[in-house]
Length: 406
Ligand SMILES: *Cc1c(COP(=O)(O)O)cnc(C)c1O
Image (cartoon, rainbow, N blue to C red; front, side, top):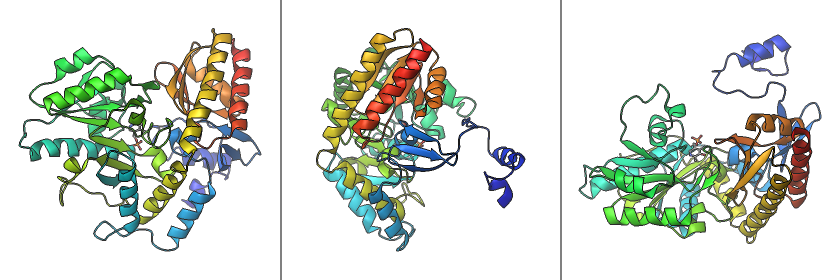
């Protein structure tokens, strides 16, 4: 077993070890990173890559940030895990800090985005039942959404690519077209409990909601006694230049799912609710063995220290604007390769004219890591503390690649 797990072993052993995994991912076979620092990743061959993917918006402060390393190390010497049968002061503190800085009054901690979504769906349904509306259990979701990979999360997204063979029955979700308010109105019925939407669609193609659409959803929810649940697993925690993305639009949700950047690379998920909703999630309704454990909570608090540091969020907006303007200029100069630029803050999508996978591969060959997204986009998710020099370097690399591909 040890030999199989060793990547640096003989080629045949490495290939064999790879085959021990499910074939559900397709990483490039020729790159293995050994360590990272800030916005850079290193291989044992001495190659240096600029990381503008951040583990899909997870390593929000880059790799090996000293404050996060310190928080993890010092907690690791004290206490790793207790179970929620005991009080976890670090978690109480993180929940209180998240509440102080958001709409929330109550928080539940999980280990991933999809679990935060599941908790939110239960909170929505649980609230309706607590209010005497047992009949209200359905949620309305939107086309091209991504809410995670558990059964309820794939059902909520309604995306056939994610559902495949796994959720053949009706799990209580209705889907309407992204941005179509008339379709939302038509979908609301006596069984509707709430609406679930990504404030900025990530996997679907870096599409921010419009102010008008989100306000109209809020109004519809208020009119019909529905709850508005935002999926900010990717776009939250400073990514768009505000702590949570909905602050950009001045619209307040009832329930919000967070994860990804919240742990800076340590698995942390959180479901934020108002006091009114969260108070109904009493003993026996929900739980998680690992969720909110002392290690995760220590790192979560350290991430929040960095996000809430004065000036950080403004700096995200400023660097996002620089990156975006640079990309828009490039799009104007190389219209046969890329077209429009979308996004908010440091969550940026570039629509490709060439196949996005070709663009991704060419950028990687030039030591710049980005992601792909739906609608033939590449997505840029640099660390929130990326330096101005690295933003410039990324734009130069992109221009080099655009020249090659035009
Ligand atoms: C990544 C993501 C999820 C799922 O998070 P996991 O941690 O992979 O379970 C849910 N919603 C959005 C918007 C995401 O980007």
